[in-house]
Image 1: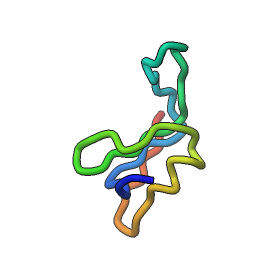
Image 2: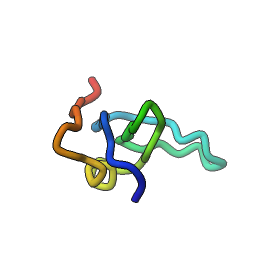
Image 3: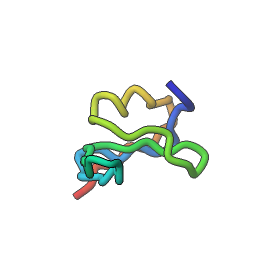
Image 4: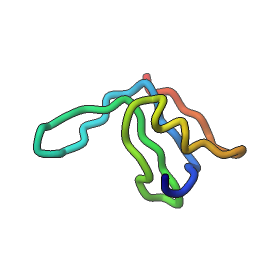
Length: 57
């Protein structure tokens, strides 16, 4: 696992732009950069005490 996230967006539909054109439900952002993309459960592992949680509409 990389850096802990400053912001985590969950319950979304995020395009990975990989060769299979898949979508994931959560992303984590750390220091202004994408730290992780995956399922809600996978990405929530990047939480820290001061992470800002945000649910997408």
